[in-house]
Image 1: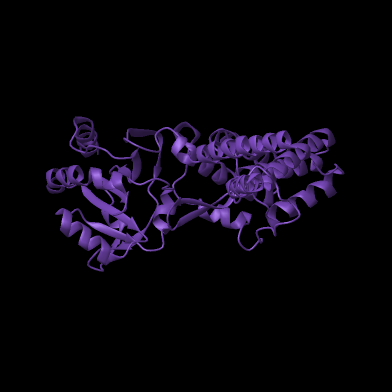
Image 2: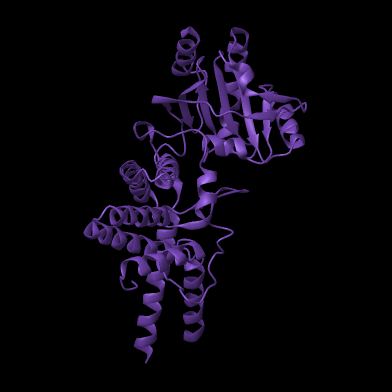
Length: 185
Length: 186
């Protein structure tokens, strides 16, 4: 009788451990490129940027169509996301370097309150323009599943590059890609 | 004491296997996710926007999104009775979804990407629907053998879907496949 209980307990313990292991592995963190340090991915078949219009932190509506013909960087982020915080300061440096050269920067935050974002930006001394995607609809249009995800859009309004995960935006690869997009006509 | 240990492990096992991705099916006992909360129209709507080309699909989200987008195109072709094109696009959708299933193979009515953002995640059920429709096309064009093979595949994918997430959507597919094909329930 004792042996029977022992065997049963062992079987249940083994099943529980196997279940824990299996459930833990079944998510997108197991997918390369979906977590950690980001890499640049260029598109062999660049797609047109989806149309969207979102309010900025001042409450003014921004329509992405108004920036046709310009190089655009769209950074999907959140204040609670550690990788977004990690890349925040280098993105700010990139913004300082390139906004005067005509590159359009928007950080898009979904489902966060304007007040939360304002407090965060003030604390971190960041002033890259932010758009508020209240419903998450714009994020869905791009298919964002990971924060941060950044898209670089060329002058023809085609999505040319994507990164997922934190990027050091001051590294030569990032700046050479933006320089290349600026040179394109 | 032993009884306590037994119940501790029993409760732990139940907790582990509860919810999406559980491997112990509780079919027939839990109430299925209603069709108003999980259906094809909602899945298609969630995946509109930036189009995914096969050449540019790099990770799980791309393959899922690509599969859904191809499916949307195939559905349109099927409605227009463009059978050969629809067949090709359903196959393309399945190619995307097959890759997706290498990353994650459990359906879920509320897959949490991050807090406050959930998606309908049904790669198995979408594959099943694709095979179901490919079978219908094959039957319409007089290829009974091909139709039966597709319906068998559809049945297998519905079964996998229902094991991970019982939905009215999946259960209705199961009925439709059985009535079309005369196959027995898995």
